[in-house]
Image (cartoon, one colour):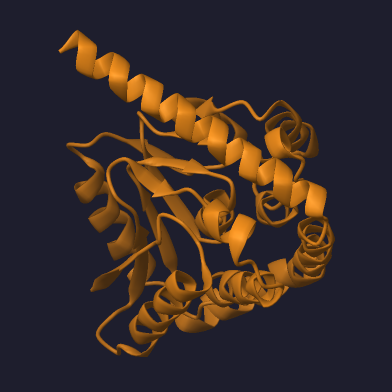
Length: 244
């Protein structure tokens, strides 16, 4: 049996605490053998709540997020991500600590943080186990969205599906994962973590991001970015209304 755990569309302390509680409940559910992370049809996750970052940010938030990433990555149960909506910023970090990722063919992936002066060091830490450094630099420096097909080619996702077949694909993979002995999961993760030093890389990413978010100029750039996005969304909505 697998159990779905919904990923927050945006990350702030309250939503992350709720996610941690639900993920822990799935871990403690003896009837659950595989945990499936899922989002909604438009967004798997947008990462950090920039409204929170630009107004009420507290440094402990970064530690909270990193601890959750470590919890998911080190889960004694296999974790599968079912991705039907776009994934950006820190949402990519949470997606990438899953053991297996199935994405719909219409999904896009992006790291737009450089647009407002932030290096996505936490997402980078999580992506390093999946893609090559030069692909990672392209995502970070260009802030360009890539398609699901390109994400599969690069290794960000493990399988491409469709809206019609993704449930079947998730069930099939969940069934395979549920038959893996716990000792193999535990020992595989232990060896791979020793090889890649994920925790150390993530801790460095956390430190670098914390330094950036303590800079008032970065916070101001974040506010400006939000204003531009809001203006664009308003103009797009007005244009769509006029067309209709």
